Amino acid sequence: MLQRLVFGLFTLCALTLTGCALSPQQLDPNPKLTGTINPVGQGQPVVVRVVDGRSSPALGTRGGLYPETSSIIVPADKLLPKLQAQTEAAVRLLGFTPSANAYNAPQLTLTLAELKYQSPKEGLYVTEANIGATLRVDVQNGGRRYNGRYGASLNQRFGMAPNEQTNTKLVSDVLSDALSRVFRDQNIGQLLAQ
Image (tube, rainbow, N blue to C red):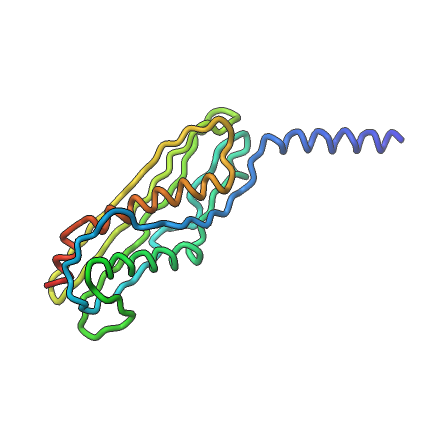
């Protein structure tokens, strides 16, 4: 009887402590190109590549009492195909034809350079998050090259710890903003059209 009581108390204490911990989240963001793009091409082929330049799929943690258990992860195999599709759509809107392999065609490489999620380290509760994304573009046409870095960030405050759906939307919004900034850069279309 005493053994059951001790086990029951131990279980109750363990559940109470883990109630303060936040579980890891694996996000599946869906970035979307927004805004208008002025077409400058005439259907020329462009080789389009999207690569992951991050050192880790982990963006950071959501903080809380045990931040080491509250990591936020965005796997490359889920995100890169979506970024590839949006980049190809942008190239089409610019007036070009995306191609996997076109001999001697201009090349556009989009690199996901950084994706981060930071919550304040102090405090037991998650009250805000700073989310940031950086994309890098390398364009090559013949002997000419153009490189650019495009970032977007968001500071979001919360009344309670955000769930996976909320964080997925926030990361999607930041990625969409960074992607839209890339293709508002008129230098990209101009170099591809030369």
